[in-house]
Length: 285
Image (tube, rainbow, N blue to C red; front, side):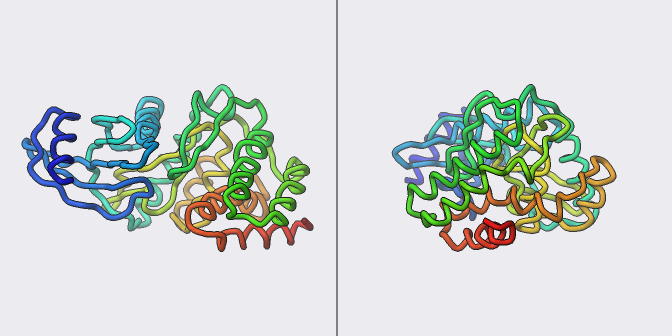
């Protein structure tokens, strides 16, 4: 297997591989750090499943590189079973200065306008299908292509009880009472949790593993609060750059976090549905 990996990377980038070391993490496939013959380090992802999709991650990284100033690793090769990227120095410990830099980067990203909500193609969040049909209404897009799509998939896979799915459907039928339309569709990274962001002492050095589309920036901010990717320093600075409308922290962030909780329920277990159950009860569903 090691010799096969050396050969595949050499064929992909046209350089000899001197050393390969396994890296931790990675929701999809195997992840390695490889040193090439010119001394450069690259990150190699390998998907040995029957239906590999690593080219989607390559597409999303290249999309962010073309359409934004968000720091992302350069893609050297992208095919369904093999992705080779530039190695980005940094770790997932964020100083106050790094959090302020993250706020500046994401506020700028969210200032990039799309023609509608969605994207030109379907993408992935982790290993899961993420549909992105163009939609003029954000509330409709979130209801149909985030909440109901992911809840339906969770039900189909046996990860969600039918009784909870019925309550989600009932809530979705009245979701316009709780959510608001954005000023414009914004470009989103889509998966800003701690290990998908790297930093040095004072600056963000890279955003990894995106789940790109155009949507409401509030869903990105909600995800950040769910797993405490960044703290109060980030939000204070982001508010100065792009003020968040009233009601987000009190209500809407919990609704938007139904989506990543459903993602985690499908990937890691149904205990992640407890937060959805509690919020639905609080809202009377």
